Image 1: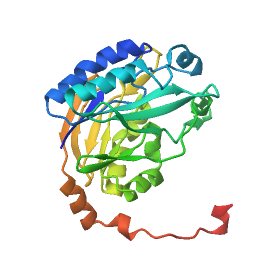
Image 2: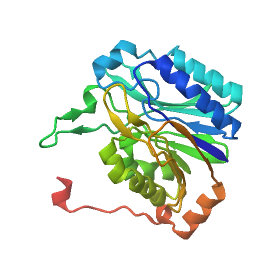
Image 3: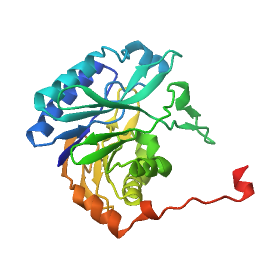
Image 4: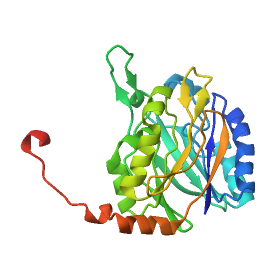
Length: 276
């Protein structure tokens, strides 16, 4: 199976972001990709809740998603919008991933579970939960000979989610992301490889890259990792582009047979001090 990760430099205008995305989807489809993943915040990359509120469309009848569904049907492929902001009733947003099937219909959606709330000494506090409401359910979906597991960006730092996805049958795990440059340089590749090794799964990580309209800078370096932890393909830059890779379901079976970590896992108790 041939898959593609699309690297973008999304801005504040959903139509402009869609216009940048369309030719890259066409390029991936022409190269034979049957599954295409885009980054986190594909349609709008705003800095805060107020910025999103000005331009984020409701999920029902969403104009850019309708066009992506039409493209999936046109090319007869799965298109996975890594995430977009969806307005919720409490004034916040869901950071929602949307998978379209080859018929153009939505196959599955996933709302990002883990939100980055941090107050770091010497830096301004960053509270993602002020803008987004975290999801509560892990999601998998059939994808040809694979089962796709869903995650988004910060989720990558939580192995329990990936272990759960693998135990639910996931053999290919998607990580659409918008990593900052410092964290990307330090952690992007090692976390991608670790999640693949731990689960014996393929990992496809499609990234935002470069200097964005909202003032943020993201790392890029979209990557595909095999179940043994090897880099199958990578964009060694932060420019927009299409990353193609061939993946094989038999390799998942082989690696999980050689290192049956999922099968060998056991429950355990914790000392009282750690439970409190």
